[in-house]
Image (cartoon, rainbow, N blue to C red):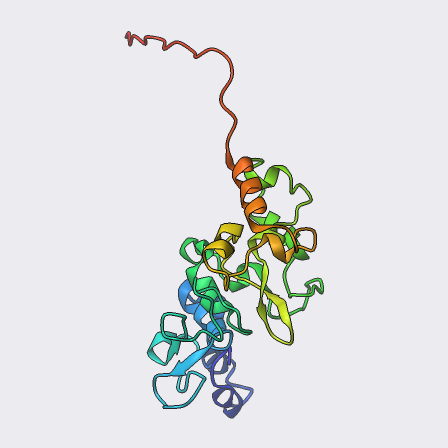
Length: 239
């Protein structure tokens, strides 16, 4: 599933060490986009393009282009059961669908940038991340803006807002979104079927949406600069 056909590897004798290595795909040696598609072969939902009626990418092998074997589901395609109207996932094992829409995807941050696959030498965490919870975010986001909601949510709970629990596996809200975008109250006001980050928190669960949106807008207004404007200094170049 991750390293290619194990049968080829097992068929070669132990003495053919280098040949055996060549039969195994190492995702770490692939380009970012190709490696992420290996995860997308399972953490996805859609239909096979090779075999009618199959829900998995028939014929796909690690290192190949997943899109040639699989077509992901979407709200636009009519899947209202597993995807919200804003194309965020509400079904389980659809992290790849979310990730493709994210800024992480366009910036080269992949699944293995945060998650580990082999636990050897790694601490055990709930989601198999290098660091627990929002501590993983600080591996890259060392400077966090203190404006807007960050000014009051100072308890370093990045994933609480940017990865809200809006997808369902066993029960509603037990899986986090992987688009890494804060869903505002106005998103729910515009479409009642779309959840928002604020009300996934127990503190704001029953708060009025209009009040929550007004509070966010108040935080989004940046303070006006104070003091006198510095006059421009004329620069003369001399040799």
